Length: 183
Image 1: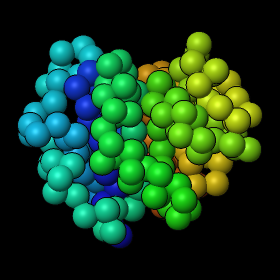
Image 2: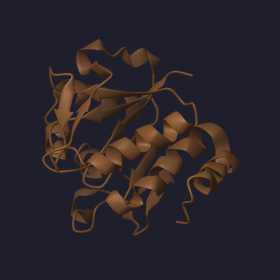
Image 3: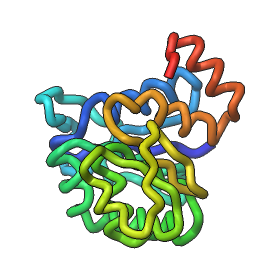
């Protein structure tokens, strides 16, 4: 299996980004933390600095299984301002390859027209940015190749939805049980 890549911009929401990384690594799914900056360390919205696995410029997107966009501010705005990443998001959606976004980050997909006719969720108050979507008030939702999550409190549900895509419902349920998640 190719790597799932979680993209980090300055001001990312720490729990949303790292929960996906943690759950997938526990399940032995290859995942990389990717800096969209030119630095190997990226600081989140709550001043937690994390060392990345690689830089955006080093990623071979032909070998990427899924793009994951964590929320947070200004992390979401920094992701959306990264043209190289947005080109890849567009290409993935067009090719029906998996893209996941949580909290404020689903707004990026809405702004780019990728949620037309899909179900999606996002951080409360940002629903107007999910242009063309049927907005649900649930922790996470899978709609075709796009998975969205509502916010920090839904990070485990979101990460388990990503896990389920690759290892199935039983594996996601087993992981939820293993980590004592009762969502």
